Length: 227
Image 1: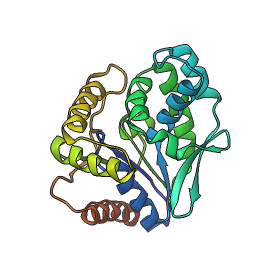
Image 2: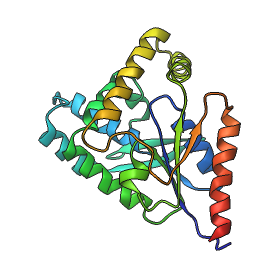
Image 3: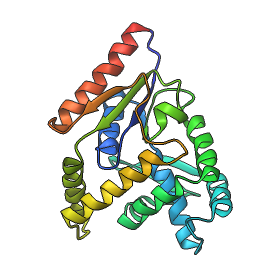
């Protein structure tokens, strides 16, 4: 066992529980948790504030390149800060979720954020989650996980999450939006959502949160022992 801290990539569709799982895995391992989806949401938020169209690729690319983004602990949670401002609450709305799917398909935005993400993951000791971490952002990651669940289960979880945040959420509408998001993310030309060839696919439909976290932590510790 080398004691080296590894780079862990967790990918998966919307509602698969990536953020919660990645946060708990990172805490268990003593690693930093990086939510790349939050970075795309942050770009969408800045565009919204400046009345810039989500399809204005050059303008959004400039926003993505110039914005200073960092992840800092606030209490027991980790928040994203943009240019020194905590925007965690503002980026978690359904509108920003939908907008980020459009924004993330823009090559100019993706190029700028992938560069930032690679810099964050370069030194190891990181659990990075998103939709193309193992395939595009950190193809050298020592541990790659593709976390998924049935659309119905993901919609159920997402509905509960939104209601806990005080958002009025209808399960059928959430399921329809989730299916539309899956279609967009899986069929886009740039970095479509798919497992890396060397990733471990974890279907959490019938697994508890604790079981999923334990499985991934053991994957990482097993890899650590082999180095």
